[in-house]
Image (cartoon, rainbow, N blue to C red; front, side, top):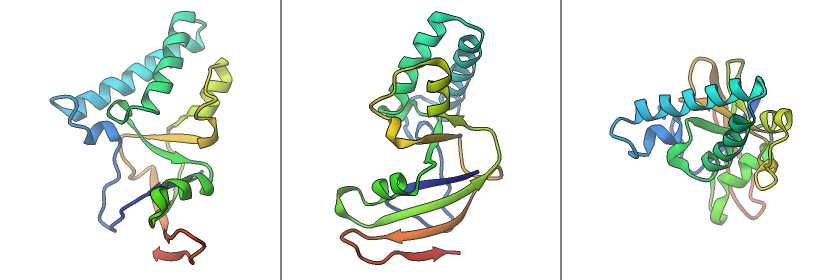
Length: 159
């Protein structure tokens, strides 16, 4: 699977983690992240089995984590280069677009919304795919582009 991620900073040794692991919202961010992943797994399983309350809560949680960083246990990626580029160029300043390849388990926000008929109009354009916890063995960065605003050329900085 090919994914993209836009961000403002990048280094070769950078560990790219879910916002919940970086938030400091909970005493132990690792525990907080696992709680969030367990919540999503439980809500998804219950929704798949027809539980209407779980489906409603899943809809709320999806919108919540896409707007509140501290609760998001996924490294946010997109299936679209243009979306990642938009994040990289935020505020008309340069940034990086990471090309990521993987075959591991993840969370396809649009597919979940479509499967359960959930509201997502405000964020559907992101084509978001969430990689649990951290980029690593199952999803790896294979190329990085330094992008600049105003039509300036893109530069491959990795590999």
